[in-house]
Image (tube, rainbow, N blue to C red; front, side, top):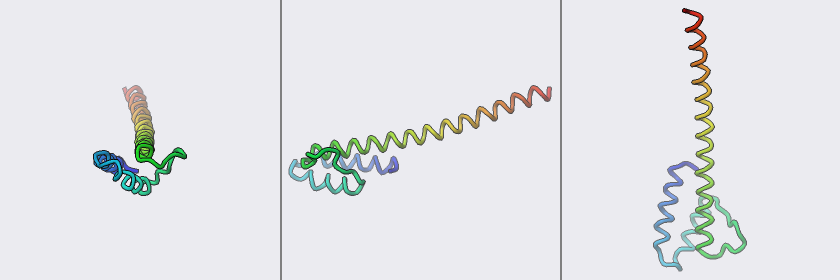
Length: 95
């Protein structure tokens, strides 16, 4: 799930939270099916539990995206360090 999709889903959740309580569950259930979020507990028949489960799922997706970004940042930092090391060695050898 991309960060844009997560933002859009969170905005939809905010709109749903403003609906009357009896109208929330069908909308939340639709979002849960769309994003593939399943019930985390057996008592997932109320809108509050489903809302929290969707929110937890979105938090997990955001953390996964952050970890992927951190992995690539670490990789490029290592590449930059290797290039800097080669530059220092070449500078020392050519002087």
